[in-house]
Amino acid sequence: MIDRLLDNARGKVDGADALWRREEQTSVAFESGRLKAAGISEEAGLNLRVLANGRMGVAGTTAAKPDAKELVARARASAELGESIDLAFPNPSPQSLSPIPTFFDRTANASLAELIRMGRLLVERLAQPGCQVNISVQREVADTAVGNTAGARGEYRTTGIGVTADVTRIAGDDVLMVYDQYVGADLPTNADLEALVRSVETRLTAALTVVTPPEGALPVVFTPAGLAAVILPLEQALSGKTVLQGSSPLAGKVGETLFDARLSIIDDPLTPGRPASRPVDDECVPSRSTALVERGTVGRFVYDLETAARAKTQSTGNGRRGVFGKPHIGYTNILFRMAGSAAAPISDLGGGLIGDIADGLIVDDLIGVGQGNVISGAFSHPVGLAYRVQRGEITGRVKDAAVAGNAYDLLKRIGEFGRDGRWLGARWSPSLLLEGVSVARR
View 1: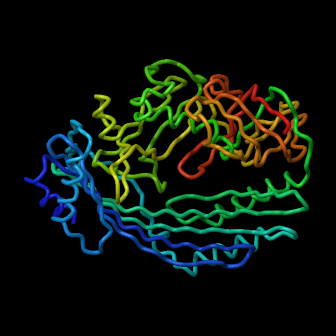
View 2: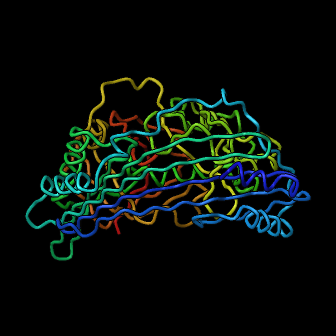
């Protein structure tokens, strides 16, 4: 299909690239311990981008039998009103594509009944008096093909599975929800499921006692789940699009040390066994690891072909596209790497960072992350799930509290890195102990 579409585009436009993707999704949902939904869906689509007279146009279709001529005509019509851009399509050799394990037979061949059994097992393991247990299991199998009129081609298959468990307890006006997830390209092992159960149970047990929140500028441990408010500003600031728009506080700072010298952040689409990994991006650019921050120093920004052309630089292989609309920048696997943190891993809440805290917090969930002026790095959010730490011990869950700070300032002086590094979706990170976070009672 890709070749036929590009053959139709040749001679009618100056250049073109295309993506075809087929996705099969299987979903299982348990609500309040009972099977609520189970089903399989499939969708396939074709996206075409063209350059005609220096302007970009796009068209897409989900038709079972796409009409290549009609799709090219629609893309050309789109280009008449499109943006002007000097874009060159890449032509990498086949040898430049790195072999990367992204497809696992166990995941692809897992039956609906097997996924239901997995969900029911978690319901049984997490059942507690007075609590509602909700389980979600989602499996995806995808085939992707990309190509362009410069001769580049790429094809790969991926699998992915996400298992989410949450336990909700309502006692009077106190609503407590504790959740965690497993995300991978291969089916979770029994040990993975047991780790998920232990994680939820540990958080739930520590949260049953409610204590008064502390106040002031305090040491706060952000768990991998609680780090979103700190990480989101960096992800936006390190995007080439934000740099082009002139709104990134990191623009013009490449090579400057702005963060703790032990901290490195990498975007790595070649990480084995992750659903976001791929040998080539959605614009035929071969995948490679990109050092966003290297030992505290600002490294590279991420680009797709369009933003790279406008910035007069090279794409980092971060092009992503759907069936409809033009490609855009998308991160793959974000890894937080810490120099000198080679101690044996642990699964304790807080990552082994609370022993020296006289009074502080563990933040596991914040409310409203992503709202407000994210790019500035400033955040102020009520806690969704947080625990008070006194004299090195967790004393209970805090309610009606908020934390505030600036991500750029806090990451200049990281207290310690936890030994609980783990995947949370497409991000790998440990807990971080950040000093001087503002904690207020509400």
